Image (cartoon, rainbow, N blue to C red; front, side, top):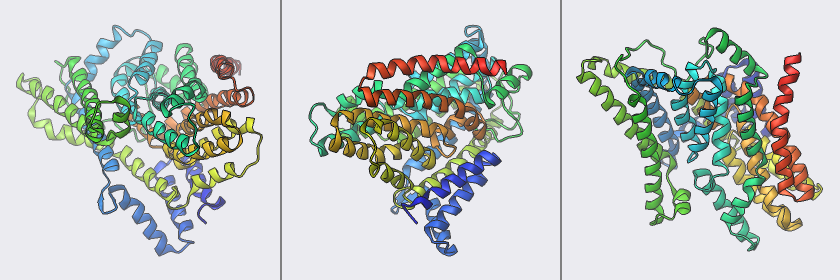
Length: 519
């Protein structure tokens, strides 16, 4: 049943259950079980083996430690402990008070979060978690709901990473483009030049980013986001406390009254400098030079996150130690603070493990869900002008169903290259740009996406609240992008398509706001 229409059933079941029940772990569990049963042709013992192997593979792959996943888990735990020490040391409170004196409005707080999301573009995981740590004290003080913060983080992390050549995403994509150009003997441009030419064609990215700022500046809230924002402003409740909130400390820990802004700034700065420095170092070790693009193409992202996290943790602990020496805190609470920090991250880690398991079962070594959808595109005889739109939609479906935009890149970019090279090579760059855009859109909408999970974790929002509230904004961005891709496909004019996208991205959310106000 692999690589057939049946391969679509598990993600459809899991995603439908998540939306209907709001119980993420239960829904992912059902998706995992259904995937295993289909793979095993409903042989229960064999299905159990598939489930066990998908779980074991998270930690051990090919007889060796799966450092990618394990390091991400450790990084999340470290971040939870850093957060706990920053809060206990009074850093978050002091930073919030400092920011309130300078960022005086809800609009300013939201714009600051969005700008930070754009600036910290090196890696989407790091972006989501670091921006959340810095922004949360400010948005909390201005009564911006955690769901809104998660949306701001999520809609400025992957969209920036996918168009930044000096990022883990950019390096990965440029590597794939290079293979495609070589395979088809295309010499008009280099892989880097092709990537840069595709940046203005990545229409969903521009739609999503513009909508973020329009929404922040005009206070546009529709769908479930309106409920969250209204509750935050009227009652001061930034999230539903009855739900699991990753990254939120559940115990009343002591808090220093003598904390300063440095209590937050120093650990986060150490985290950022340490992570970026390690990315440069691991990339340098791999290529033997500081040529920036090859360095980022070969950097060890998760190892860098782990070491950067340890550096940030060391600084947070040292700051706490200075307060103990000043008699402002008791050293006896050290282990309790650490445990509470770890415990705060466990809900996010459970969801991430289950998401990784279902993604493993859906990938091209098992059910081949993405490959099946990609084959439908390759075998379709559609007008060449429709190809960018079609690839955008299919890339979105693959990323939504499998929870991975990178998987969509790997599957669909070569197919886009093959179709364009054999029909009309002038449509190559628009087609590949549409794949990138569609993958980011699908990733934004998918409750099983790791970047969606980490965005809700960074913001301290319930995961399903983030998914449900972000969905309408992502769909608006996708509709705007589709309009642009129709124009791009038939006119070959990037300027015209981008201009229309910019106009629609500004006007459509405002029109929706007016309609919702009238109703």
